[in-house]
Image (cartoon, rainbow, N blue to C red; front, side):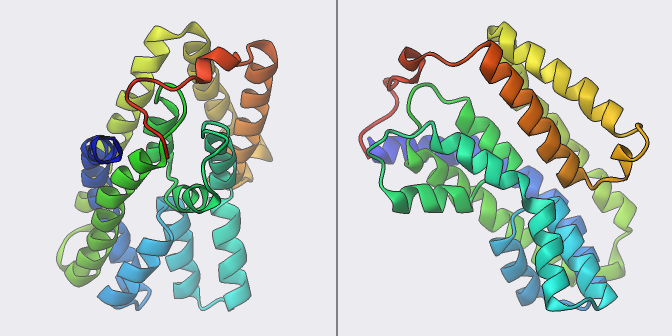
Length: 243
């Protein structure tokens, strides 16, 4: 059962990994301009699987800021993943070991969170392991190749490939939204609020990560209060096995 779930995670993680490869390639050019080697870029991407987080990291390195400032900037930009990890922790079987929760939390990204939260019943960590197994290496390799390419390619051309990632994310959220009215309303409200936060004075000056955190807490809290998930909805589906 673990093998089947793991393979399912790999299958669902392939399009995510391909999208990550394109985005990471453009980030690799940013990393190259910051003076990082291909190996350094690979390590940085492997332990910081986040486009906004890595862009902030590479930009901070290029500006020559202190280690403390680099740590703070990276933490703030990536703080939303703490919320995603907490949300997924509620989807595990209560008997799931801490080591599984730890490694699943390590590999949380927007897209992996999307496919994970869409799973029925309790979440099997081996599903996440499969998605992480294929997507994280492609992300890291993409950064390294971007560094090697350096200035040989126009950054605008490479950055244009990232459009596929947004299309993929829409493909993740639209199917469950079509099946569940509450999810559909939450998605629409999220889009509208995200747009408004990008134009409202003061709020628009906040970082993307900070705005995401604020919106996530507010919208998810309101939805949870209005339409809480029933206990029976968390039962194991036939595709989930024992951990």
